[in-house]
Image (tube, rainbow, N blue to C red):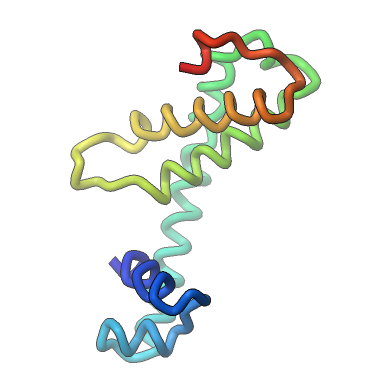
Length: 128
C-alpha cells in the first residue's frame, strides 16, 4: 500500500518522494515509514531470490536451443528482469499465483531481449 502511495505522490511531484513527504501523505511518523519501506524492500528481494529457479525453468523449458549456448547468461539476466517486473506488477487480489503470473513476464523479457539484441532470429510464432 505504501508503494502505491509513493507512486501517486511521485506522479504529482515529478521527482523522487522523500520519507517526510510519504509520512505526511499517510499520516505516519517518519521512522515508521522508513521501517515499512525497508520491510517492503526486504520482502521484494526475498521474492526475487526465491523465484530465481523459475527463470532457469523457463529457459530450459521454452528456450532449450539457447540454454547451453554462449548467450545463456544474457537470457538469465533478461529472465530476472522479467521476474522483477512480474513481482512489481503482481496483485494477489486477482487470485493468480505468482509463478503463473511470472511465466508470462519472464518469457516476454527473454523474447524481447533476443529480438532487441538480434543475436538470433526469433520466429513470429514464438513471439506471440
